[in-house]
Length: 420
Image 1 (cartoon, helix red, strand yellow):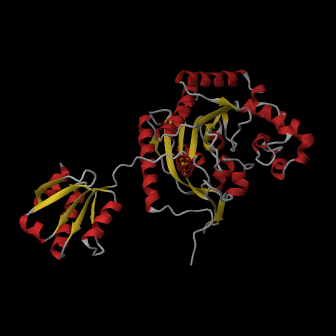
Image 2: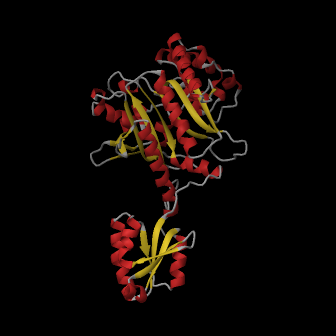
Image 3: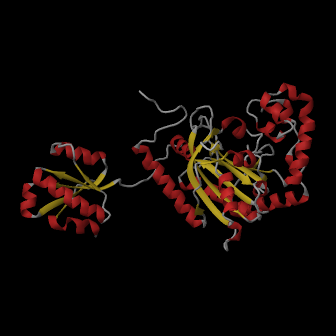
C-alpha cells in the first residue's frame, strides 16, 4: 500500500466543509477592507526566495523543496507568500495602477521541510495579506486591526497581540553591529545555527529556540536602544492608532521575526489561554518590509503584511471548543419507493439543483427506513417521500425535519415550492 508522504495530510469531506467556511469568511472580510485576491505559481525561481527571504534564514538554508527542472533551472516550491506577491507586483508594474496602495491577499499551499508536529505540516495552507505602496502608520494599524478582526470573527477570545519595532535599515544595521559585539565573546557556547548567524543575521540569535534561555540572550542589547528618531516616531504613531482603536498589545523588544526583509513594525498574534497546552502558541505573524522591493530589483516602494496558517486557526478553534456555525448542509432529501419514483426523482433533482436547491436521493437501493437515516446523516432540512401513490395523486408531503411539521403540495409544484 502506498501511504501519504510524511508531513502532509488528507483533508476529508467532513473537514473540507470547515475549510470552505473559513475561506469564505476570509474572502468576505477582505472585501470589507478593500483587499483583492492574487494567485501566484506554486513554484518559483529559487533565486526569488534566496534573495527575498534571505540566505541566512532557516527557511532558505534548511526547509525549502528545491529541484532542477528539465531546463536545468533551479526551482523551489514556495515556502511563503510575500516574496511571490512582491515579485508579481514588480513584474506586472502594479506601482502604476491608479488605486494606491495596492492591497492584496492570497490563500494557498506552501511547502517547508520541517519536523512534523501538531499544527505544523510540510505542506500547509497559508492565508496572507500585503499592502504595498504606502509607508504610513495608519496602514500598519489597519493591518493589525484586521488580524484581530479575523480571529475574533471566529469567536476566539484568548488572544495576545505582541508588537515591536525593528527600526529602519540604518537602525537595524547599527543594532546588528551591537549584537555582534555582544555575542562574539560567548558565541562558542551557542548552537551551530547561532554561530553561523553571528555575522549574517545576528538578530536571529534572539529568536533561537535552542539558546533562548542563555544569559547572553537575556542581557542582549534591546532594539529600542538603537532606534533613530524617525523610527521611534513611526512606532509611537502606530501605537497611538492602536490605542485609539482600543486594541490591546504588548511590546516585546526581542520579537524579530524569522525573515530578513522586515523593518519597522513587526508583530505576532498569540494564544493567551492559561489552560492551553498545545504544541503551538503563535497563530499569525507579519510586519513591514521596506526595502524588499528594491532587493528584488523593483521600485522604491514599501509594504506591510502578515500570514496565518489555516491549520493553526482550526487547531485554535478546536482548543477553545468553538463549533463553526455552518448552518444546514442540505435542503432536501428525496426518499423513493419503486422504479417509477426513482426515475421521477432523477428528473426533479436536476430541476431543483438548477434552481439552487441543495438536494439528493438514495443510490444504494435502501429501504425507506435506511433512506430516512441517510437524510438525518446529511442533516437535511426537509424530506419528501415519493412512491406510486404520490405519482398517481400528484400530491406530496414536504416534511420539516426539525419541527416534524408537513406541508401537502402538488408534486409537480415541488421545484417552485423550494424556489420560493
